[in-house]
Length: 522
Image (cartoon, rainbow, N blue to C red; front, side):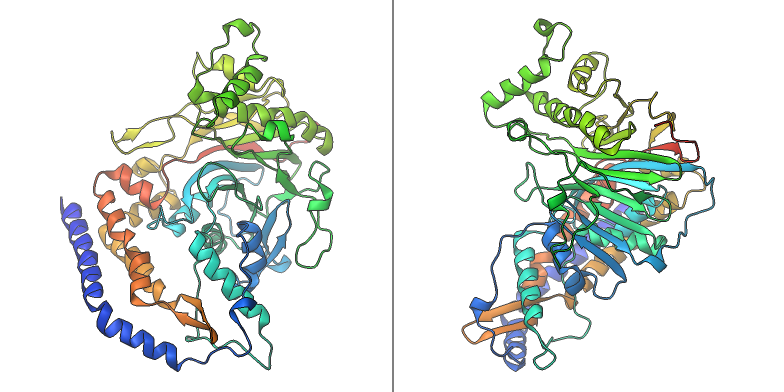
């Protein structure tokens, strides 16, 4: 009861703050901004035409801007290619700070991160999510979102200006410790590196899929424990650095679908080849589509392809709702034999949010979808999505898919969800302690205030006929960004499931243990 009253007061405080700011906007704030803008130095010899307006390409453009905008004060290396983008610590910082445990275990996780980095999750706690992920050595991540259109345009314009700067003509900034809105996956990586400096990230270069901006999948991995391996599956010509045109290692890429198959998919898996100790394996991270294809003919083609995998095709029954989801599993499964051949390795761990459950009636469809990759089977039956409406865990959509005989290093008895809804039952766990602390009313207040104060250091480019100037945000711009926070705080009042959705995700992660010290059998 006390927490509810406190949270209600907190929401009222921020609503009052917005009202006050709004009432002053046309007077003090706007006058101050105009005065500030007129007093700043206009950047010389930069016409509006010099700021190139290009289409935002998601992580690829983020990677190219990383050292200029996002990671300028952080010691991190980047590799920017059309196959993958890669963020990792410089060699002498690959120092593991992992908690004491058996060195023979490789802890594997998979996590749908729920709109990581976009405005649908403005109260997300990156530090708490990092604390959860830090339990594992490698995490298949899904639902990584690109920057919004307006944000990406502003950041690219600032990056273009900074590239034009010279020692003789430096770019003047209105404040010293300026910031921009950073992609969510980099914010999470920065928090992970505070816990262990060896954390790294490799993900797909371009967004794809159902939402207007698309989304990405990738892998966070502890580079002191897990290493990437080069392989021949990915197009060699697309593993060229877009910074200096030098060839880089051929490490990862999206599953290489044929045009005919690609036409029937919304998203496909991101694939990389890993080694930890004696254990090497192909990792696949996928978030299957949720909505059916828009064309009925495409749905029928998906069904037809799936039904070929049935022992009795005349008994094949796949709903329109699920056809596209199973088809995306099938499309990846078709490529798995090719991946194994290219990697000279039989171990595959296919993981993610498949938007499909494992039931007695669905197993025949799973088997049909996985028929191109014989003996791979899905695991993990526990509900893993948060049901806000009914205050309970609901659908079991998150799974590991593997061949238990070939990949005998992984203990299927260890497969489970990390149930952050019941942190009281998780003993001696730092992540559980951090989650419990983050849900306290005073911590919610501190998080909201931190996000509000962060707006004061944001800068953007303003261009007119006279040239371009870098400025801080107006009070209205800050208000527009912050306006969703009170709404999210209000949502948190519904129940604990809604609170965890806003702070962490609408999915729990799943996990399993593998042994990395055994002699690899392939």
